[in-house]
Each structure stands twice: as structure tokens, then as C-alpha cells.
Length: 267
View (cartoon, rainbow, N blue to C red):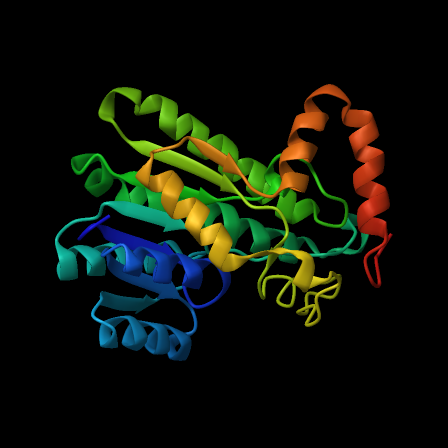
């Protein structure tokens, strides 16, 4: 990873921030992207003050023009791109019957179209360096989760898109990684959209029992170094994916029962 140019979206907190710090430890050059300018400045300054090489671009990945600018700025600063980490994402928790479709669209725009826009406009640079495209997906991209229809749809779409991209570039040595964390301790549930289109504010789950974002980042960086196609994280996540191949109806019931126990569950 030494001197590799890495773009990380959603870098201001959670898994994105942890990935930035992990790649920094490996000696990579970083272009950090998020909507929060103050948090980006804080993280960029920390990395640079500790001997790293980081720059930032304020961007909303749901806007294609922002993604184009992000890529242009990276080339202007570093002249190349080696790794793109599509991490920016938004969650939701509401029954479809109660959800306004504009909020469903918002989740799709950030999680799926954000990945599409960034990847499309970075692709020629990544192909030149035989680089890596990473999609930070979720267990929700392997198994649809109740009260998270938009989130699951966006992650399934991301998986299909990245798998197709990998296959069409088999002879171009493009590395494509789909990383699927289980429930991870981060701020994503606090910012999740509820049935009224507002932020959930409080996580309905016990964050202390989840895998840390730092641990997830270590797995992602290792998977990039080893050019793996996919990783599924946490024992629970791996078990769910395995069982769903053989006993999907039973897994449906197990998922329903587990998520129905969340605080203020909508079902």
C-alpha cells in the first residue's frame, strides 16, 4: 500500500474514517471525501501532522457532478488513482407501507448511485494502474432485512453491479472487492432514516456487542492487499449467509424474530 493513491468516500466517520487511518498506517496517499467539511479537515490535519499525506474534497456522492469533481481533484493532486473505497452510505428503518418513496430514492441515490458515479468516473484511472474498486456492502446485501427495504435493495444492487464489473474486466486485471460487514459499531444507525424521513438519532441495538469499525477496516485493507473478491464479516454474518443457501425459509423467521426484538421495532 506504500504510496498508493486511495479515495475513501464517507471518510468523516465510522468505517470510512477507520479505513483512512488504516491505509495511512500502510503509507498510502489519501483523498478523503464526505459532506462534513469540519470532520474532513480534522481527520486530514491529524494524518498530515503524523507524517501522512492526505487531502480532502467535500462532496455528496448522490450528485454525479460532485463525484466527477472528486475524481478530477484527485488526479490534479496525485496524478493517478490506485484504490477507490465506495463507503459512503445511509441506512433506514421503516416499513415500506409507511415509507415515503422520496426517502427510498435517497437511500438508493447515496448507496447505489454513489457507488456507480464514483466508480464510472474513476474507472479509466483504475484500469491504467490495475487498481482496486471496493464496495462496502452489508449482510443486508446477502439477505433482505425487514424494515430496511431500501437499504437492502441498495446493497443488493451494489453487489450485482460490482460482480458484473469484475467479470467484464477479467482480462484487465481490475480488482473488485465486495466487503460485507455485519452490524458494526458506528453512527450509521443514529443517522438512519425513519418513516417520517427524519434521522433515527438513537441506535436501536447494543453497539458495544458489535464489531468495531477499526476491526472492519483492518479486514478491508487486508482484503485489498490480497486482492480478494469478497469478505463477509462477523461469525453471525457468515452463519446467516451460509444457512440462507440451504434453509432460507427458516432464516427468514430467524431474521424476523431477531430484528423484531430491537427497541421500538416498527413490526
